[in-house]
Amino acid sequence: MGRQPCCDKVGLKRGPWTIEEDHKLMNFIINNGIHCWRMVPKLAGLLRCGKSCRLRWINYLRPDLKRGAFTEAEENQLIQLHSRLGNRWSKIASHFPGRTDNEIKNHWNTRIKKKLKMAGVDLPTHQPIDLDHENGVHKDGDNKEHENQQVEEKEHEFSTKLNETTTIDDQDLLTNYEVLMTGGGNLELEGAWSSRNTNYSTTSTNSDQGSSSSSIEDSNDLNDRHQSAGSKAQLGDDGEDYGSLKQWVDSVDSMFSWDGFMNTNTTTSTTLAGKWTLL
DNA sequence: AAAACCGACAACCGCATCCCC
DNA sequence: GGGGGATGCGGTTGTCGGTTT
Image (cartoon, rainbow, N blue to C red; front, top):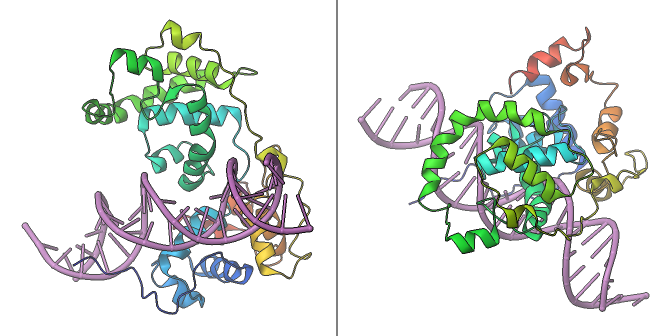
């Protein structure tokens, strides 16, 4: 007999969130804070389960989200963190202020994973594939537990070293990876690995997605609004939240002051900031 | 022009863990 | 101590826009 579902799914809405739902959830959290996710949908007038509300808030509505293309430095940091922490996305996300674990996980699975694979890196071992094969290394088995025990001990040291490796420019991913691994950790990079020819093709990044001119005012179609907000067209080249979040903030600017969420010094948002700390 | 395919990301699901009684 | 509810987390799926055929 399994555990009970987090909520009664009968009659609950699923799928993409509409702007009205976003408004309701945002309004409720701003005005009341978060005490019990289970009660949030009821009190906010939403036909969603608490879990869904939590995810929506954490991954999309939270005003302090960075939202933007991952920079090269961030990708490098992510690669190295993953080599240390594995798929512990929440742990990794804690090193990226404004990024969510879901965002990082998606970025890893859709971009970095592919790039590393094309570059000949065996995941999750972060070892060159051919070297693994030749040496018979299978680190994801017996050694994994031991590695996990070392993770916490090395994090502090690692963070220090990481700061020394974030100025890499104009090198391909493999070269970056080599530098990072050599500088930050205990992976051995042998000649064949170092000299590997990297002819993978980098795909376009989100930086080409920042040209959207959609706005809330432009569209009464909630699905269109959601799509433009929720996936493709909200990102600016410089990583700032030029898209949906900014539009969203603009749209509710008359109701709220966001400065408190943005870690800026303001006297108009102390209440909001206070509630924000509840999270 | 349209169908098929692909990439990116939002959202869901189920298990793990935490916490309170 | 343990039972149960709430929340956290990671894997997976769904959806949609863009691209290719």
